[in-house]
Image 1 (cartoon, rainbow, N blue to C red):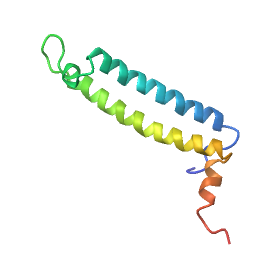
Image 2: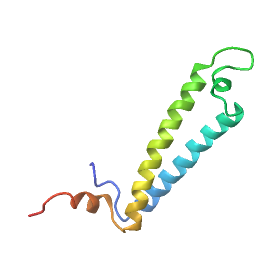
Image 3: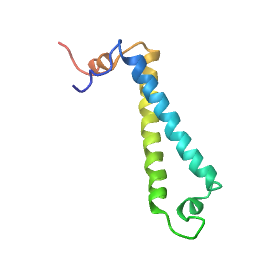
Image 4: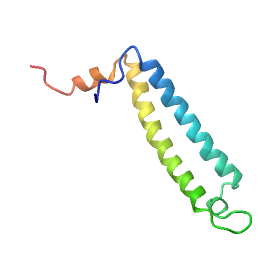
Length: 97
């Protein structure tokens, strides 16, 4: 099922899904940084002095997800620009003869 899940009929929905995923993850990261006055130590330490490792790890994991999905989103935007699907993009790498 790899390489053929995004075709002409469902690529609009897939690209929109990737775009909104990037927006949602970026919104979470910026909200957490804004809440902590853009200092990592304010995200790591709660107002009462406790260390909140779970919140810090959530920001790290969400940032990694945002970067990964953004690269995937750019790749699919390139495919939309050239009017190709993932099937056609992958087929050009192999000799069909």
